[in-house]
Image (cartoon, rainbow, N blue to C red; front, top):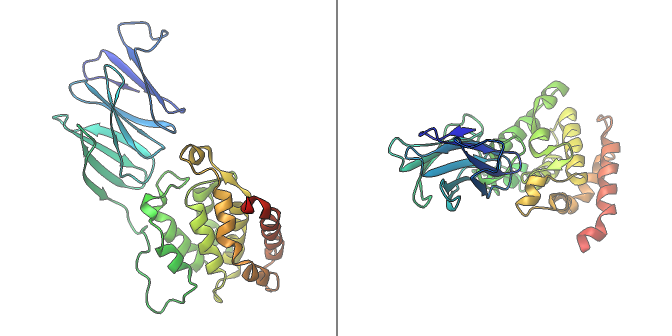
Length: 294
């Protein structure tokens, strides 16, 4: 909720993506004076320009939208953040708009047309793997990771997917069950069987990592468990709204060419429970042949 600097209006953003503005000199139980509709997911932040003329809103669709406070007309859409927008604001003169996301990025736009002015990431060690050493094998998961623009990708945690390659590298390096369980990838790309945009690239990275001989049993088991969730889940409603309704199909297609490698996991010793997970994954792939063909 945000009150205009003049104290005459109340702005409220909600889970459905709508933003409503009430005149404070009227009954708040009545019809709002302005209804702003444009966000594709929950609204998490809002601000009003110092002169009260422009409303800025941001949320889970990773954009900041600017509105005419009097008419509700769209003024501009400000893009460039990679995670949920958790705060927005205006400069003292009202000419610039600032937004921050959960991943540590701060972006600045001009108020008139939403033109980007600057963007700075204040993250730590979590970063995109963009450079692949020359001694890395052709099938390495690092090559798969380097193919994707992670900061621009959606992730279920709200930070954006910038951290995903780093988290995956942590899982690859895990040597104990505790270390493997400490990696939070499952809640980032798949939450309650609901998939987010980063799911398919991670599926490709998993089948590449499974080929590595020195992968520990706890890490291998965690990856297979995660892979099963990716091929049997379905797109989160927020992804459907962004025209990504078949992420589970993308995950299946990402690993379909690696079926022989997955079958090789059935013969691997020393990883209790792995064979059952592989069989379920293969059954999912086999059961959706027709879906992929269509």
